[in-house]
Amino acid sequence: MAHPLADERTSFIRFALAHKFVTLFGILMPLAVFAVFVGYPIVFTIYLSFFDWNGMAPHKTFVGLRNYRYLVSDRYFYTALFNNVKWVGVTLFFPVLLGLVIAYGLRSKIIPAPALIRTVIFFPVTMSLISVGLMFLLILNPLFGAFDTILQSIGLGSLVMEWFGDYRIALYTLAVVSGWAFTGMPMILYFAGLGDVPKETFDAAKIEGAGHFRMLTQVAVPQLRPVTAVVVMLTLFESLRAFDLVAVMTKGAPFGSTNVLGYLVYLESFWNSRFGYGATLSVAILVISILMATFVMTKLMKGAFDV
Amino acid sequence: MSDAAFLMRQRSLFAFAGKLIGLTLLAGLVFIWLGPIILVVITSIKSNDAFLAGPFALPTEPTFAPYVTVWNALGFGRLLANSLLYAAAGSALAVILALVPSFALSRFDIPGKKLVFGIILTGLMLPQQTVLIPLYDTLRTLNLLDTRIGLIVVHAAYGMPAQILILRGFMTTIPREIEKAAFLEGATDFQVFWKVILPLSVPGIMVGFTLNFIAIWKEFVFGLVLLNSEANFPVTVGMLKLNSDRYMAVFNLPAAGLVMSQIPIVILFLLSYRKLSSGNFAGAVKG
Image 1 (cartoon, chains in turn purple, blue):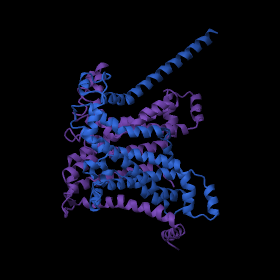
Image 2 (cartoon, chains in turn purple, yellow; image 1 turned 60 degrees about the vertical axis):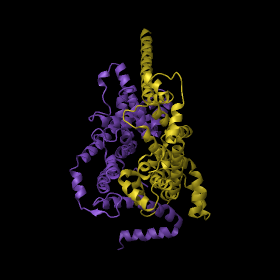
Image 3 (cartoon, chains in turn purple, cyan; image 1 turned 45 degrees about the vertical axis):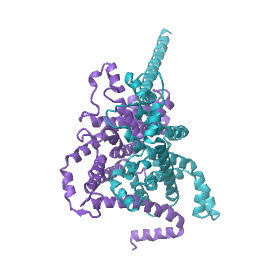
């Protein structure tokens, strides 16, 4: 009996011989790009995580697991890790949930002028986070910022805080700002998804006397599961990339309380010249992303990427 | 009779309340998402003294001085030109790289197709920070560190997976009858790709290119790490200078800079808004 893999291999060769153009430029070329820009860098990062290297010197010193031992006792690592987790939490709650509610409000015609709303909320998605950061440095400025002024003018002056200076809230400030810029994404995806739900489904629920809350939670949400899978995936990976806002708004301050993993890699490698330890942190991010990707692919995206 | 009138009035009262709630929500959303942008535009055409005197007042003497200052001090023309080059060349290259793979993955029963697709998509999910050090090292070895070409190649390689996702999704929607006829007449794979699939894929290519263009325009990390000289900086990296301190002493300059950095995207946004905001590219994932 032929080995199934052997069988597949011969048939791939047979396919390759029959379709040279497709095989060469359609399969081998993208795999080569992957190998050079993704595969090799990952292998190199793992390799480097066992070394001490200042990024310049021709030789790298092998240190075994020392970087990893340092990692598990590095409190900056834990702060950054939990900051990433908090960031994901805020993002799932604020832009994703809000995007869903707005999309539902537009589809059910509770909120008028859908074209205007979609344009206005989607626009920040096209802005760089550097621009968004500069914008909110202006708005949240303690002396001349609009936000504090508005709070004071509506009698909520007691809520005014040091949005960036207070180590307990600075990270949430960043996450909410990033949420402001991101809301348009889940909103248009949900808006498109709701458009695909058959109108009869909603009509039937309406006849049964469902209010908007039940309509949203019991009719729309189950129907939107595939869209939610895409949105959650986008959210998880966007949050793991959180870097730009930190770089422009706080640079990890105060006291490293707004560091995220990505920014820590950058600091350790390119500022502290500890490329070996930077690589170790990268491996940590990699492991987390693989765990997340596995979760997303097996639980949420089942079948979404079927070819 | 009076019951009916009462019901009618009650219904119109409900409708009125509903409208009022709707309008309030509309105003609130517009205020939250448009307010900051309007404030920045207003700030950008004020002198700093005028800003300090009344941060939210409409400008009494609008001035373009902040724009001139930022343009000259940061070499904004060069920053914009760089970003334009990176976004246009990087996206074009990403789309070109993605064309045949999308054709292959949407049209052929290739053994191991799922695996190939899965591998390609890994690049989409990989956080950039995990590959910064190797990319830095590789580009230095190739003498491409701190060069425009180096950054364009990296952008193209990392744009390719998303383009394959979008274009493959688009190409699967093209009916197979046309190409079947072509194959029956003895056309080669290349001829079918070039003469049938490619022309029909233009709308998908436009969407993919636009999304990739915006993504590169927004991109910051690669530019920050892989470039050293200001002459090569894209807008995002160059603008970092506008924030010298967390509590900026000058507000009109960052405002002017960020308005300028956004203008090309606004133009692109206006041109392609309908296609993008419809969320149709979500269909790429559902395939």
